[in-house]
Length: 260
Image 1 (cartoon, rainbow, N blue to C red):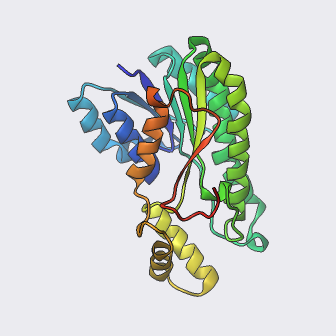
Image 2 (tube, rainbow, N blue to C red; image 1 turned 180 degrees about the vertical axis):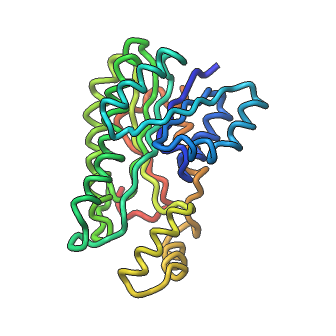
């Protein structure tokens, strides 16, 4: 019995795949989202899987970027379902846009949802996980954490901050049996990726399909990542097979990045 996994951003393509994989791994799920109706609509398939496997799924409406709301939600989760074994932060987004065209509201939205969402999750659940002396936290960041892009200045900055959060907090959590790591996906075949292609096409005067084809052509393995590729890495980091791994990252990009 694996216990429970708390997942933010579970209605997105990557978050949904992570939820499905962790459900298959035997976890009960607590899925966080800002819109209860969207949570219900996006998780109906998972609910059917959970019933057939005798696992449970709880839906919690909360904005992880709101510290007070997150603290109250975490207290309710722990009181109702116990201390989670796993936390996965897959929420947050950022546009493809050159720095000169960005607005403060776009920066603030990405920082609130992606960076501060991660901070609030670690703050809200980290202490009780440390008291239990077990657990794994996984933050979904992105390739621009390692290789900043002029086409994604917001994502580059926010993802870099997520990496720093993971590295610094890992040294605080590890003595108490809690691990924290980051997963950096490259382009992932989701609906959001095609929105990104459209944003890039607007900047470059092309079209979204061409942007997608050019991106795929630049990936050495010849395809985009699937959401399940990312979910499998998360599954590994949540398992005992990675019990000596903390404060580091796994890149899921098919060889696209240049760094080592």
